[in-house]
Image (cartoon, rainbow, N blue to C red; front, side, top):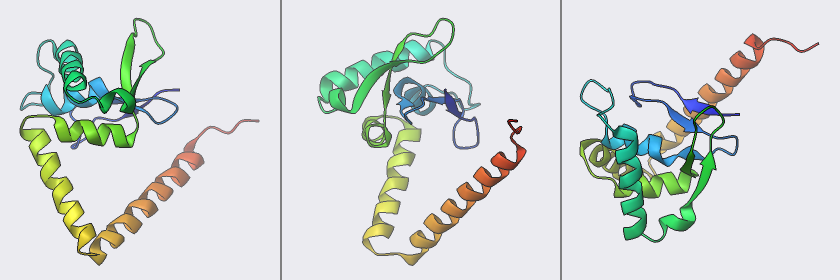
Length: 147
């Protein structure tokens, strides 16, 4: 089973997620480094993202253990690097460009809130968990029943 982090205001393009929760590194890099102002992909975005990842991997040996190869199901799919949350966060910290800089800025703000024991952060986490739970309940209710 493959899920996607759907196109939204946060992500211009879909990002594939496998059944183990591992995220396509190439899809993340394409979203951060190879989308235009109108959120369309640049020419050769996929191959450029893979080249970018390979360069990062050669410069940062820790990525070799953070990422594994995975072949998503479907016609024409090839092996692609995937990583869990920790690996994706490592990669995002290494990327260049305006979107990557914004991510690092947001991460620094979040870390500052955590270190300052900002109770608003606890409220945000609770609200997010409640929203996820409500979405799961709604999806379960709308899912066709198996007899």
